[in-house]
Image (cartoon, rainbow, N blue to C red; front, side, top):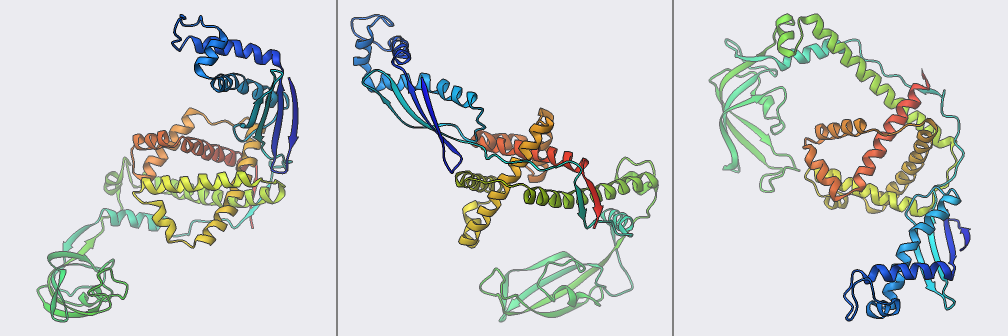
Amino acid sequence: MSVNLEKNENNEVIMDIKVDAKEVNTAYDRTCKRVSQHVNIPGFRKGKAPNKTVEKHVGKEYIQREILDSILPRIISDVIRENKYDTVTEPSLENFNFEQDGSLSIKAKVELRPEFTMPEYKGLELKIDMFKQPEDAMEKELEDIREKHSTLKTAEGRVSTDKDYVNIDFEGFVDGNAIKGGAAKGYLLDLAHSNFIPGFAEQLVGKEAGSEFTIQVKFPDEYHDETIKGKDAEFKIKLNEIKERVLPELDDELAKKVGKFENVDALKADVQKYLDSTEKAENDKRATVVLFDKLLADTDIKIQEPMIQREIKAMTEEMRQRAALQGQNIDDLMKKEDGEKLKEDMHSEAEKRIKTALIISQIARNENIVVEGKDMEKRMSEITAMYGVTRDVILQEIQKNPQLLYSLNQQIMGQKVTQFLLENAKIVSE
């Protein structure tokens, strides 16, 4: 067998392979015998028909294709292994020809991973704008806990304020006609966080319980109901009751209600742990951006266009999968975007992602960093919590699109390599 290799500008290797007649003839005998064991040829028991009879029965082209399928994977694999090629795609068969002298000519193509020189990546100094929790962070977190465990009680002997809840009956009119769906009785409205029409809640401040009055508002120009958007409206209101939020004391009793805390000091320690972890996560995030910006700037990698187009296709599929998990249609979402700008952005992002992935892959090989089963289980749990779906839903998506599993593997590897780099970097405040 003879092999001629030619590497082109797209980082592809063109393989011109000549398989000698002796090897082809051996493959021919083996193929005819295998085929004869699975077909019924009149006058012959299975596996006993002569080669030429088998060939005549199933067709010469069928036998040739079977020969090719039986020897091509081994031949291509041997060429790749002997030349130590680092491939990024499966080899593709360009053409083949069974010659008159009994030999076989094959032309195949394989795409290689771009070669590049890895810069120093350990001990990098990363200057970042360090995030610090505000001085009142603990106070705000504890106040949020108190609010989440607060209760409402009826306020008496005073008018409503903008921090109250009010129980109201209301009915709305536009041009003297009742608004469809614009009436309710016993509705509890939070005046501090109202999502009603602008100006509605504000006009309920300073009113007494039991009072009846009318307010004037205007529906927004972008309101969803075409019949009333941008129009003036009148609402008849009856304020039934004023309620005020009562916060519990920050004590051991509250700590036990919040979680398995023996006392308020244990609760505060847990809050501090949360604040410290979020501070570290934010600074790691900022350092990661600086880290990879530096590595990308210091690493000269020439990416071939076919790789970029495959990555764009993968990115589009990822968007489709995320949209599906959230019950959305990717095609509808993409129609809302500027088509040309979206293509440019995706091309640029795809190139950046490929370069980043190549750097991560090289560091992982250098440092023997691998993805383990426990890493995948953890990532699956994160996804179920993030999208509010079951593990079975994710597995079904992976079965429909195996590329998703590869994507998850790459995400995990990226996280592990990034963590390694941060642990070996010097992060300083800019």
